Image 1 (cartoon, rainbow, N blue to C red):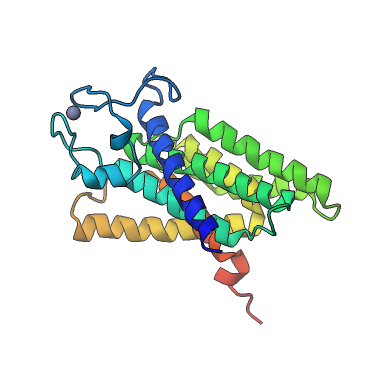
Image 2: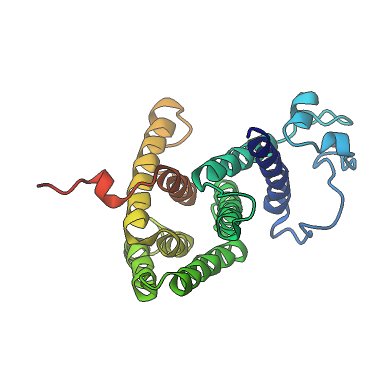
Length: 263
Ligand SMILES: [Zn+2]
């Protein structure tokens, strides 16, 4: 059935377009849900033809129809990321028929979490801050999932899951404390704790290790090839952690797969 993935991709694009608005309006005093979208440059209100995800950006050649000011690449990029992530999560969490409430709820949960993480990652790139107004809902949902699993599956250890999250957050807490906030922000500590609750000890640690690998590669690239950064530049770590979460979830990667036990 090809139709459903296409529908889910389009839904992901539309949500991505909403996430852009949230990212751009957060902490500016403007409501994310009310007020018409307008050109950031000339203030011209945008019609629906200018608000179709990705298509409008391409159709307008990346420029405002009225004042020809360039439109931020963030718009189509976040829309595409959201659409692709929705389809990837749909493919990964097989929905067992239209009437399987649990599998639809799992998918819905995964896209809500993904949306919060996309906002955190892009906001961190723009402002080097992981805002609490998005972080706390993410952490609460991770805790809620632990509570649901503990209720549905008697063999699931709620205490183990809570303690596992603390272990995943601990290295970041130590980095934050020892460097007095220079190597890691406290936002990264909260993010790692939430990831630990979301993924558990094994996948959580796998995500941390992959995040450091991606961070090192990205740092090397930016310093040695793109020449946009120096050794003293600080890269926000949140986006690497969030990309690593996606890789670990979609690849079902646990710590033992990264480091097979030596026999
Ligand atoms: Zn304009």
